[in-house]
Image 1 (tube, helix red, strand yellow):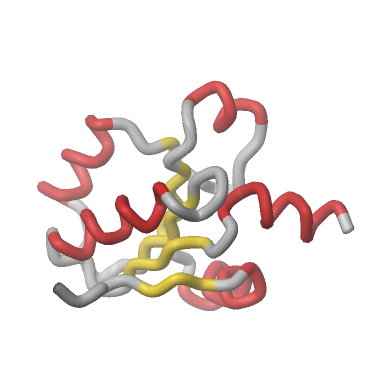
Image 2 (cartoon, rainbow, N blue to C red):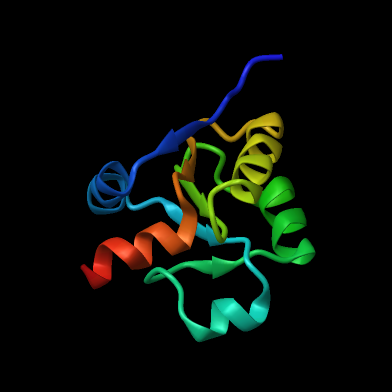
Length: 103
């Protein structure tokens, strides 16, 4: 089995967001999503996953993040398996993103 998604650093993720305007997916729990998330990020829930798989633009890049970068890899693989072409997992997750933005 080959990995069909890429893990991106914070810097590379910022470039992707600026240049490619990916759909950004937050797979943390709803409480933490509501407490703070990346700009324009959508909270992932089963209905959203199902909708994206059935009707999503599979040519549009996806940037997925979680708390520390592990769960987002599983979700990135899920979307890759369903034919999404450019799928990325944020290395270090939201916690690393916050660390670098507070420094």
